[in-house]
Image (cartoon, rainbow, N blue to C red; front, side, top):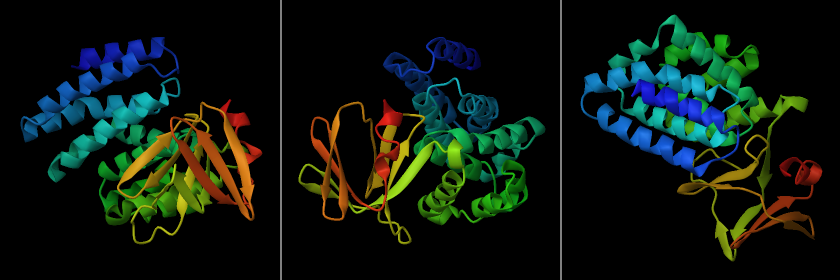
Length: 271
């Protein structure tokens, strides 16, 4: 399985940074088989995580990799970590893996995609206990206020706390920022209004413009949605609202307050 993974990585790199459905299917087939082995026993879980967690981390921090590939591998690793027996997490703590964790923290800053950032934060939280995060956060993030914000992420409030943390991280990056986030007033899919996620402390309906993956993404009640703005769109201004209309198979209307100049980078950065 390790040989298969490494060969798959070579194939991925040979295709460059472009999205390739055949490669995505290959990765999906690989992880489907790996999960069969993983589910056999607790010992199987330990062996799979010990062998593949560092390899997946290496893939995620490699900027040559397509973001879609990184997202999918992270989802699989987080699924494995979720089922890993608590006492088995000690296998993740050696010098090599601690270095990978630190590199994952750095990758958050230039990921260029909110969903990928969320996956990395989730992986760091799943690989560690709360006490370990208190100790390690300052090694992952050089700025104290970022490290402290990370420490405040609670597993029970992960979606809301992660949003607060990543909005803070992306907001302080200045010219290096690759994820732009704005609160919207409402979102309609044709005539149907989409609802904000039901997290108790989530007060805004956030829309993420991801320069790295060239996507627009947002979370809705009961699901998450990612849209790729590869088609022409029109701008409509109604009173104090700005409306982004993405013309796809069906129309998506996103209304923003005119205070936010969302077109300062869009669509030029998505060409």
